[in-house]
Image (tube, rainbow, N blue to C red; front, top):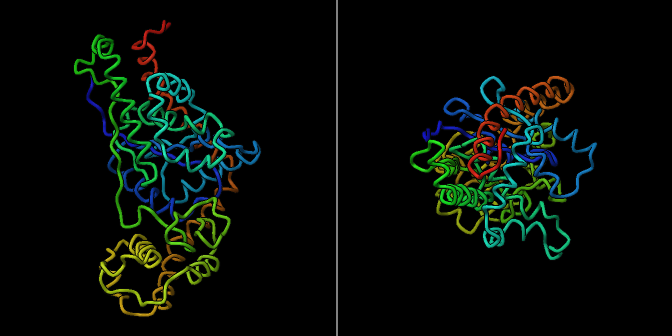
Length: 346
């Protein structure tokens, strides 16, 4: 009973427009994994409300992000696509796992410190316990692999710790339930690959590309039109030196490193091959080539997002179907958790 089917779980928050960092850092992996794994992709709307969201804006954003999922290439016939709040097992399991996780583990989570800032006493409890809900999202489906960005690796390590501690704490009950090796929850593995797993700001190569950056020039939104994409690439910050011809020449040059990685990821080439083609030349030539490539790759995605946003009924039908399929997996697993921890289950 303790053999786990290779299963992928991942999700994005419905806050702000999805951008190039989401596409290269996560979405391309999601698309490829549809052909090799059983995939569950979630719009994590429960995570979104860890900070205030205007309700009408949140409802629209859930549909908009789902439209972006579909426009990028996620196929609801191959993958389960749903929004988190429609499957109540996420919240129930998060409470149980919150009683397994230790306070000291959460105190080490650096992302809470970054998001809460200096006034952490005013932050929501949800923002603090967010990683426990993330653990429930993942291990509640017995997911074996999680395609994540570098900034989420710490949270995934926490999910692994929680899974292992649950198995240890309830080892006797787990074995009594028929899991002879004592492994009820699998410790999920990170899946991080590609030349641009961490895409940086177009205005500052030392900062991650972000929806929350006040400068729209810092990111390429998936909804940007061709002219906007080209303008942002041409205005992207660079330094005074030519592009190097060797990868070692990118050290200490964050903007050059970022733009080269973006080109490599969009083209499917290695960074070495990109530098062999454009190295020792002026940045203006390289940036024009990158602008053309980005328009060719992202322009059709933006057009499809707009089309799908105009067909709200279809997008909502995808979410409804996905939530039913997701719950068909999660509900039996959480029912077993109730039995293992000692709840009376009817």
